[in-house]
Length: 234
Image (cartoon, rainbow, N blue to C red):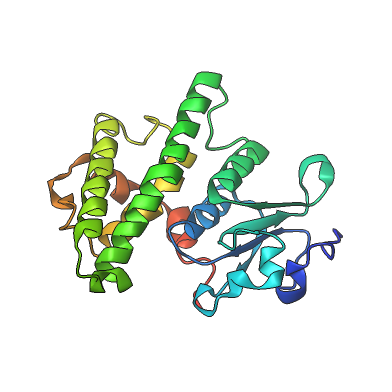
């Protein structure tokens, strides 16, 4: 049985199944990337709910695994060389799990890097921009009288959706006929933008064709449906 006692986070969130991947997360757009990936691959894992509303990511135990204080993070008891490995950053975790299982990332070099570039597009652009739009439209930012920040993030989010709309023209998935970690990285964010954030009208989502159809296909996948609810909210 793997010994995870060297990871301080396991003192606060004990592993009942230390032989499984330990997932520390919450079903946010970033968090569900990893739970969806785990569900899609079928890797055994044990989810732990991290209550960000109670600032649990800023506890010493969580920071010992992710010094940036953000979910998600994992410990794989069967990492490279059979040794336990802790990882944070959802994009890095997606790449790791894809390479570990040989799934959802093309083996051919050019297609592999093309897929990775779309994951980076989500990490560098879609996530930060959609998140800021949500803050200024739905959360405390809406109380700010100066609406220039909201307009900036609205315009950029609309532009990014346009990039996706163009990419998906004539394609079932971001990489064509193959569903990959590029799709997994983006599904939760687009869903959140028009659902939880309620920003569909702001970004003229109804004018799009390819993105809504892609989102519908993605949300219809059983593994996606399960992953969107893991871990359970506190």
